[in-house]
Image (cartoon, rainbow, N blue to C red):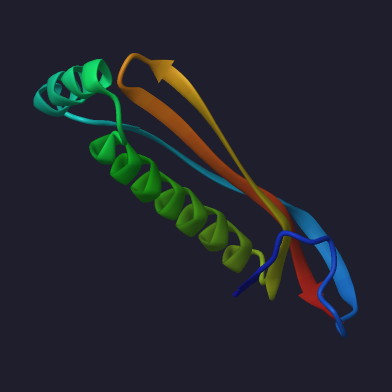
Length: 103
């Protein structure tokens, strides 16, 4: 599956199929929340949350690709990501784009 953040793939004629998306809501356990809270006092990278967001992006992307594959897509163009806080310590990540078929 080809994933690109442009609305075209050079050298390919595309037939648009549909919007596809994948999302997940992730959180860390209470122990991680406490240690990351202490980290905000001294500053620096919040590695546990960074890891959580990387995992969430990967899972959201996987779900988007699975949706595109179900409709027989060859690629997803114009891929974008968005995230939002759902509650303290939990975030939603969504991956979305346009499923296309090569013609």
